[in-house]
Image (tube, rainbow, N blue to C red; front, side, top):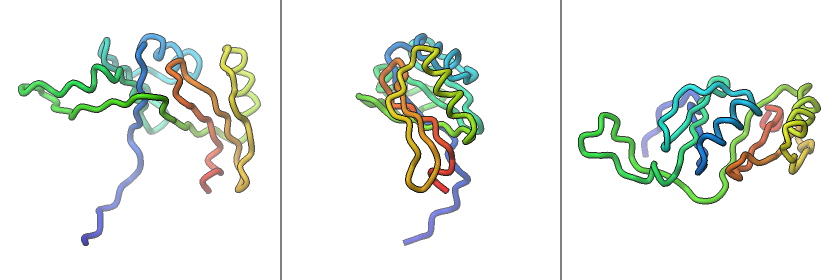
Length: 139
């Protein structure tokens, strides 16, 4: 068996939502991410630190690319809630919780992990499980 070449990290993560306009309002207005690309009815993309969050409409991305497609991305899409976690500094969690609640977002869980680091869990409008965590949870 050969040894895989070295990776440098995660570049993008994907979630799925039926209502892309609602998703865009949530990710920009509530979470504060910058929208960087949009294809109406198909996807909306956001900058999240050094990574990109891709939000797709699954029914659109399940279609295989046309034979003459300039970018022949294979079909994909999933059903049910996904999960996405963003990192935040340890001193920001009380402010994040207050901001989410002031924005009408219910915090489902707020706890300190046994190895250290705090996590907040809530849902985006599509029902995906979203987490804001202290990177210490993986230290």
